[in-house]
Image (cartoon, rainbow, N blue to C red; front, side, top):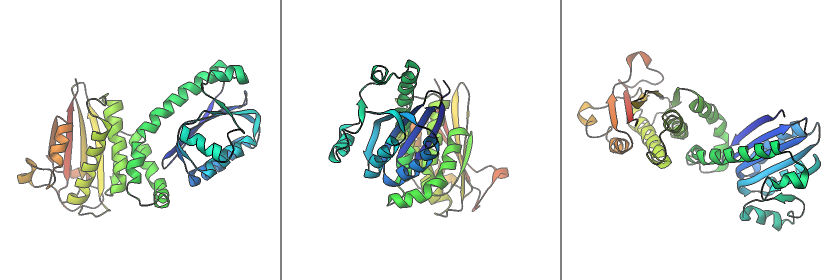
Length: 316
């Protein structure tokens, strides 16, 4: 079995394609909101893959939170390219209502458990196991896409957010894969810092959500960004915020660096600049240290000595 995999991420919507040309099987797993614009973009992408030959389709809808009429139309579009069958997982009740309203529930075959597909369509155990594994992974990805909601908070409309998402995604990839990141001093990049902190805390330091839950990670990201934007750069978006980490058997250290006005030594022991952020961060981390930014690393807009905030978490 030679499975090819492609993934596409939009605002509030994620999808994964898995297909084996030798077996003629094409699996599509959706997660999130199937709004008009991302579905149209997705249809263009998948068209290049399925127009050359026919496939048997298995489509998982279990993590779909909303489906537009365009989303339903996309499923009809897929039907044109089916070889023998197209199976949809039984969707959540709210999604099934959309099918029923347009009398589309009789047009598709639904399954409740992937194991049914072996008897009903002759799908191999290998494909069924792959479907179960990938669907489980998508559930985790959907949960971890908290960064999408954080990003979305900065825009009044979907259209505004859609215009900016392409600028954000390279930073998201950097946050996911790199040991250090640099982001502009703009609130919409809070989601990137959240993504980076989440990776470092969960994957690198193996700190579970009982010790530091996702809400605290989000609060830390928002506080750190607000602190740099408001107090370091006076809301100037030309500043640079750098974040890196190091870890050993004893502790995790995360440095958040700006090159703004710098901090007041008289206030550093009692507050993080004039905000209450230091107290919040101390509830999450064992220690919070504040110093000037490294002299040799200054980048972007420079308004003073800058600030390094070091977050220290002891590892058991």
